[in-house]
Length: 319
Figure 1: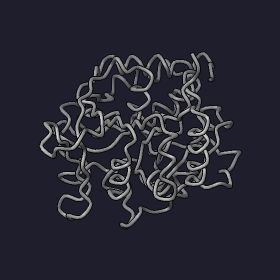
Figure 2: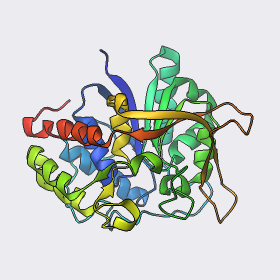
Figure 3: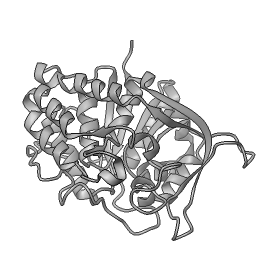
Figure 4: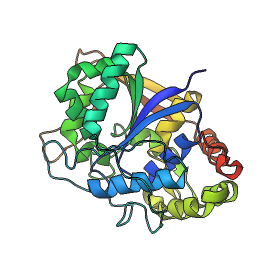
């Protein structure tokens, strides 16, 4: 089977790093580019982190395109759980390459325009605020025709928010961008907190990942250990939710997930509920669904999937 062409739009980020390391050893995926954005950290840092992760994963062949340095309209906010660098206390290798001269927005427009012309549509893996894609769509709406689908991590529906009472960080960081994307007509699979809170990366899992992941074991274990929120009241156990990596798991192992169609609306005016995602589960709005929202995850199956994938670093199998 021909590999799936993907672009990874992200803001690395510990969980983004796990997602990228998984994609790097998945030959089913043809990674056309990584497009860091202002999110967990300022753009300068997310670009550097992406380059360092490419170095760690021996995938310096994957181009990195620097994206938007701030949200569309609001002031930037940054992540609270990734440490000062965005990668906890872990020191990743110095990058030997630099970002491409083309911006992420221009790259998205070019790549998706070509995809629309050739019919080889691209899957967008959105792991952070969706500023890059929203700006590209505002500049050239026709690029939507080059997108196979968006598989995104963001939002909160029946689950409470993780940055405010109502809102998940990626959407809150740029709610106007999320509104643009959800209004684009592009097929969307949404992995919200409703899904990611079902998959906790527990201390015993970290020990297993350290045991099987070969040359990246020490780095991976440090990153994962830093991710432990130690908030049993919120999550029911030690550990941290496996947010962004679930995007890769969904693409590669969709049988581990269940979805429900709904119309999604994004609040971008109310300061109290800024960034809230509202799902019309039962057609109250009279509008057609615009997303498949993941409602159920086989948590044990997902952990087993990632253990199998990341063990490829012990085998030195690189896609």
